[in-house]
Length: 121
Image (cartoon, rainbow, N blue to C red):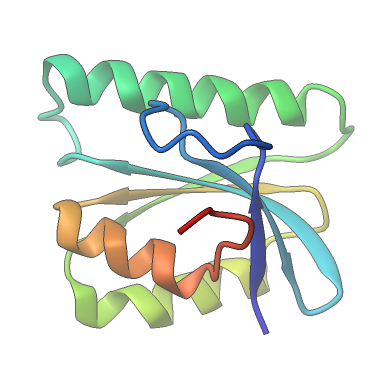
């Protein structure tokens, strides 16, 4: 089972441009992040949000030796579940996985699959 907690919480700030979580999967901890954009065609606000998220992931990895960040593009909602499970399985303990999503609907599916806890309703 996948369980994730926001790294920029408590309290969770839905207006934050950083979407970074500490994710537990198969007895390991992996840092995850999510952004919306197309590879090579990220503009304005999207670029700033993606850069902030990647910087937050890099800051976490700076304290962990031999960790790496995996970046994966997710084109559609059908691929989201399989992609999350595959890359979390492949990642080593304390690695980071950044999911670049084609649109907000795909990002929503990634977020739902990561099973984020501690978000107030």
